[in-house]
Image 1 (tube, rainbow, N blue to C red):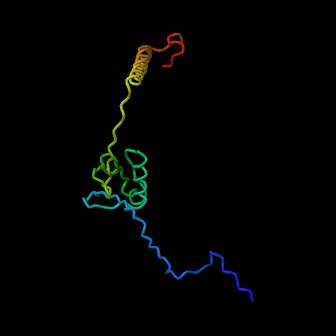
Image 2: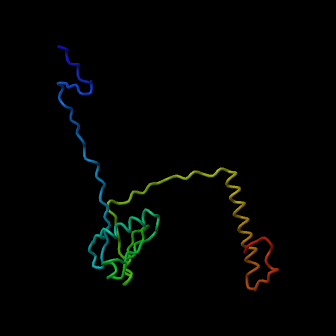
Length: 156
């Protein structure tokens, strides 16, 4: 009898115990909430849509946001200054405060200084623009312009 060939290497079995891998849960992202003091001085939480609108304006670099949807529309709308976190009830003009949880982290950055040549070019360009504006202003101040009064090639 002919002996059977050994199984291919990928199908060989070993007596080693199977290895188990443990997976850790992904890190949780903190839920962002925004709250404000209502006209009675009680802290209220903005709804989910309001939080998304506020966060969108904040990350988009806007300075303020107006909420006038749903319940906020019924009270005349709310305006939030995102720089100072001051909240204004638009119907009554009452001012209150708003806060974000977790609070915003201010990241300080340093700007790089211009080199001397770039600074001189920038200054000369700005001065030329100022002089041009002054010249145009002197032409247009207190009189009606005729086509001959406007310098050729310049825009006022």
